[in-house]
Length: 393
Image 1 (cartoon, rainbow, N blue to C red):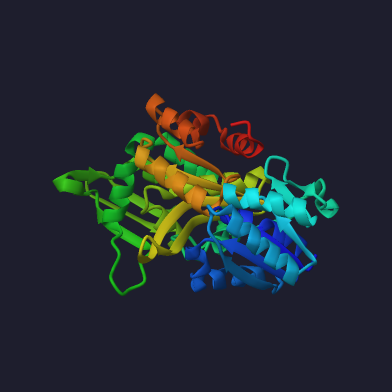
Image 2: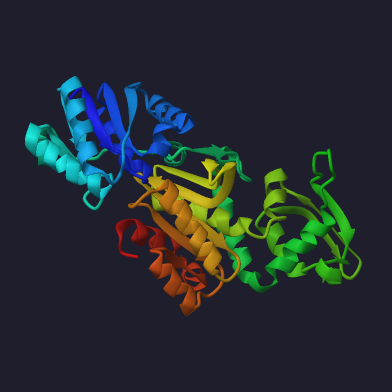
């Protein structure tokens, strides 16, 4: 097989797996007008293959997703020009699949498909080389964005540094659980007495009043127990509290400073570590910011995924919420999963609040797993991730 014919699909991974596994010299995509004319997206697809270590000839042939007779003629023309070809019928429209069936029957051109459930390729007609062939490909988080025409941008977290902090994340989360109800006020207090200075590196040494201004004219006082707990886990050093008057301490380093000034960091870091601890994933990223190029008439649209992990050819999208789950959050997560992961992708939303029935019902409709406060309190996050990836959640 020198040439592989791909029936272009909206789910990016359906266009990638067979070419990347079999690596023919030439790939011909039968695709709709918007893809056939989108040179930028075409170049990104070529860049993806180049990143994977090979440079096939990639051709894009415009076709109608609804005209089976036209698709059939185009397939016949391809076979005449490239007789040593085969056809992947994993994706594509109903009309394209109908035409592909006729084409394979008339010409004997090999046709095969991929089963996500079994993670194997199967011979449809004359493709003995694909029969019960296990898909051994492994993709990084960035690969899933690139294959769908997106770009991974730097997020709020330097993932290269997280490995040396792994031992800190469980104690940090236990501290959060102990003071969960006061956590917003605790973080607000730390923010107020450690303000950022524009144009200057943030100071690690902090000294401030015992009571400071909060939001909307409120007053926030130091939570002495919480500050001492943060000192016990090593996040704060040289803590001195004069009750009712002043507080001073030193952040252990700049990363700790950043995490103690962000309400949501503790759950994201704990989730990141759970993904690592599970041993399930070949890649994990915290704060994955993806830019969609040329979406809905805009030059670019960006979204952040709190934690994302990949297991072979299956991505997992995780949204971390320190609030009750809202419908908007579920919808956004489903859109990102479908856009960048495809049919086999997994998604879960993790909340530090109890999950109400209405949210669970909506999540079930969208095929999104829920991990809530009870699971977190019972230290079940790793088991929940395991169940999700095994299809038991």
